[in-house]
Image 1: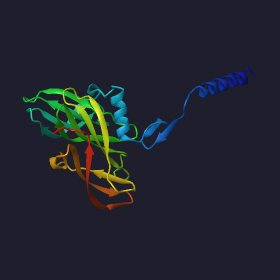
Image 2: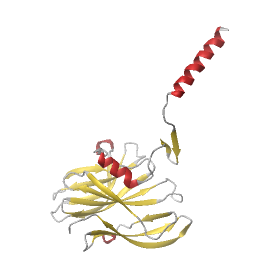
Image 3: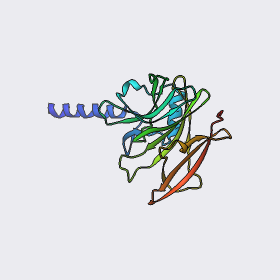
Image 4: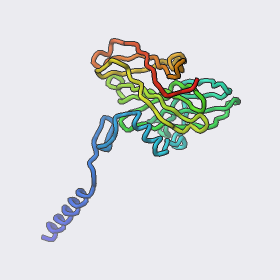
Amino acid sequence: MIIFKLLGFVMLLIFLVACRQGEPMEVGPDGPRDSGASLSLGQAIQEDAKMDAEASSDDWVSYVSYASTKLKDGQLCSTGILIDEDGMQQRPAVEMLDRNGAVLWRNAIALPMDFYQARATHCVASGPDLFVLVQADTQSVQSLSQTMLEVVRLKSASGKVVSSQSVAVSDVHAAYSAWVEKEVSNFILIANGSLQVSGHYKLMAAPEQIFSFVARIDFDVNI
């Protein structure tokens, strides 16, 4: 009889604890996420900048450079990824080097929970700002993953994220995956003060067909 009473008391405690857990968690393709999590790469990056909470590169032990761009003042803007200690996670990252190759700063760019991984691939400078192209994947399985493009604006003196803007492929209303090849000419400043992004995309429903696109992003840049 005592055992049944104890069991009833334990069950009551479990019920009370469950009732206090708050909002439920939603399970996405990459694990649990908050039910209010945004699917927008740009919104997440801008929210991170708004809260002045850019990811610290101290938590990531290995930097891999994808490309380097020489700036007018002789400094070098390096774009790539930071990898964690276990080698299981990566984040887009930007590194600024002086004329002698010494690292002035390195910054990991925030990655939303709804994206599997991302990389910074291109960099251009305009006045006190850097503009970096981020290519982010939604899934670990390539055949299921969509790659989304985002231009992130940072302060060249510190690496602080200022804002970001999505790169959309115009006149495409179906699910697609887009990417930009490594050539410098695919990410440039043009005469009217805009950024021009040239790349390719495929429709998720017909991945065997590859199309080209050119997008222009207005950031009110000075060239």
